[in-house]
Image (tube, rainbow, N blue to C red; front, side, top):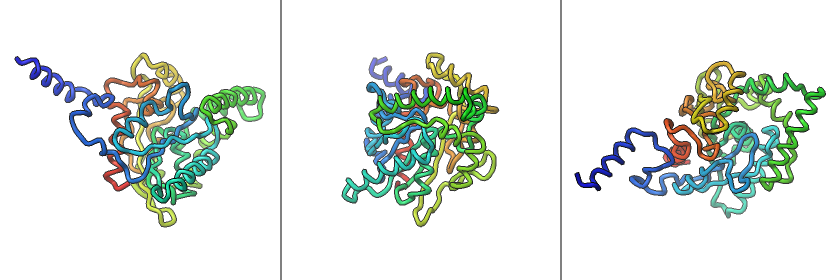
Length: 321
């Protein structure tokens, strides 16, 4: 058989039989503008938030993948540890600045938030809906995470053990902020944890219910209209604790998952991740695989997070967003 024909057949078989990993076959099809959304995409990080440290992105290789699809992408500077209200106010300042500098070209944004970044995005959506075209949450514990209850139980705020934990955690958070050129922000681990324990999550949802399912494991509305501003809502998540065996996060989330009853990604329970239109809630991904961490070590038996993000940019574009 002609070697060129043989190579083409092998490539076709692989493209059919394997998940679309890292866009290996993207050259076979499609315009580079398929993800050119009407409104810019803003990637909102979760806890341990940073944009880039030592040349490594929080959203590892994802901004470039989206820009290759034609999207305009921003990664805001957000405090490593703080409440979503404070993080949200910081995000609003940056969105207002981007919009003001655009000479009218930019009016709204597609917010995509990972973990606490999803709650942060929900806060912005509710208090400044004029800035938001869509909110997509990834592995976000909308109804809280039992991990927060465990931590606040082991080290209660104000106790000797709690003070020690607070001091250590905030020192780590402040270091992350410093390395990420976010020097002005001071971490507040207790403000973050109190938002994700059972009572804190319930209080936030009572205040900002838009998009949150009313049943235990249902879907929320695919869109809401807040003060005359229509906003599309999406979410997805995974339920894997072990994905590669090489990724150091597998060990971490294997341990943390013991505190969470039922299927989870090691931090967020499957049903807790539901918000708006649920695209899928059982990807073979742990809590940080979705942002292509650690350093791209994700399962070979699941669609690449880069491909998921490219596909979502196309979804947003096709929805006129």
